[in-house]
Length: 565
Ligand code: MFK
Image 1 (cartoon, rainbow, N blue to C red):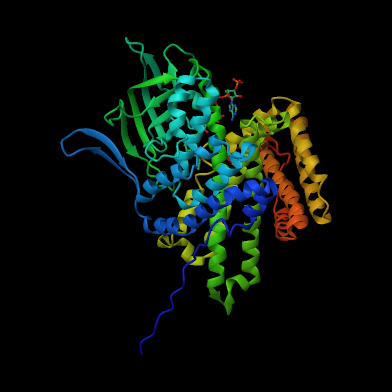
Image 2 (image 1 turned 45 degrees about the vertical axis):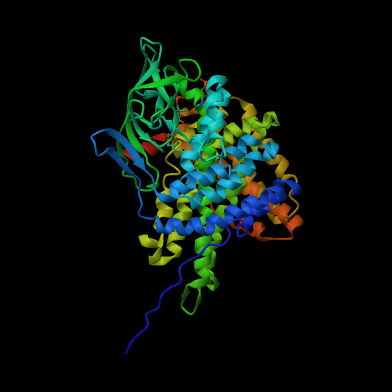
């Protein structure tokens, strides 16, 4: 007897803009109707590409990792990096659709960052982390503009923000050395001036993402400068000469990474690379901080977009996969699991786009003092909280596919591997928790700005259940700020030990409050209770994480040291 085996239909994606109810609802609230109508065709167009052609390419391209070719056939050292076919396509689409340009053209004024990051949200999960070079490109443009170096800005920014793929440049951000990805102040790269007055860089960069870029911003210590970040200077490097040859840069190898494998991350030596100081000859970590804040915002949106991709695949699959007599989408326990990840996504989306709005207002010079303080405080918080959520959601999404989620050629395991980079690069969770403390250390106005923002939102919520969860979220933030104030004076070390729980409390509580605020708007304006369901569900996950654990207890546990009774 011939038995026809059962074949499970795979998950499919539709138009990733049309199907993204939380994104469309958010945009309907924050973007005026006419402006939204003017950008929707481009969003829909990208949503179609993301769920269609690009998704198919991602599955076909799965095994195409970038390749580094050191030598040509005739013995010339070329250090050529061949990227995947999808990456080549993504570069052209990114330029043409203005993934960076949109923020600088400012068609939507203060909402131009919202416009841009809506495009990023759709493009990111469909292009195998091509968002990485774009993030640094955006960061480099912002840094050059803020540096006041008109010569460099005029030379590079028109290229970094071009919509013409043949003119478009990407930028690297070469900071990490083997001495420290976090403690960048320990960098060993040295800058010297040659007889002609040209600055040249000498050193080894240990983890340079997107080494194919035409330019890079990097840090080096001018000879004779002191130690630490203050002794480093910010330099501009054009990577190739007029003949396309690398300018005294040796690419040793590509990193063998857990995820983001399409990103050609390299170890390289700067062997007298010509470079130009961007601003002064010191305080490099400070002058590169616009880059950090832009890339951390990209990281946040990419984390959120990755969650959305996972939810979309899991949701579609649940309608197709039958087990124990019914599609998974009708099984209460499976539905409960998907509801949990959908709520994480919707809450994270609200925080991400709140931060995006703040940056848009600042760049359009329409920001209040409160906006400026909140942007400094919330950029690291949004990055760290969404990075953690993205990993947890990706893990849950894989599990929702059962064994198929663990099998490479379904294209699913890469969701988890690529998510795992989000809490690591651009500042780990711990480094950003300390950055949160640094931001609050600028004075009492920062915490006051957060209190005022929460107050103004809670005050407008009319639905009783939403108001109740928003008040609980506000209470958790107040408690956390109170813990910080009282513990800081008595035991600064305990503050450092509790910094992650503190930052996550602020992040998750604010997500809940923003989601409750949005859900109340959606009830009244869209006659839709799905965002309320998301807020109430999100409120059942932990968000009040601060606790008094003396650092001595933590040390005993972490290092397995004796602890006195
Ligand atoms: C999917 C898209 C994602 C994008 C992918 C891109 C991939 C790229 C891969 C990478 O390159 S990953 C490498 C990323 N590396 C980091 O993010 C570094 C993490 N470490 C830190 O952030 C440290 O906190 C830091 C290097 C900044 C510490 O350096 P220092 O020299 O010890 O800094 P210090 O003394 O705390 O601060 C120096 C100045 O900078 C201070 O100003 P003042 O001198 O005026 O007091 C700080 O206030 C300021 N500063 C520091 N961080 C800032 C900042 N200002 C604004 N915003 C910030 N975030």
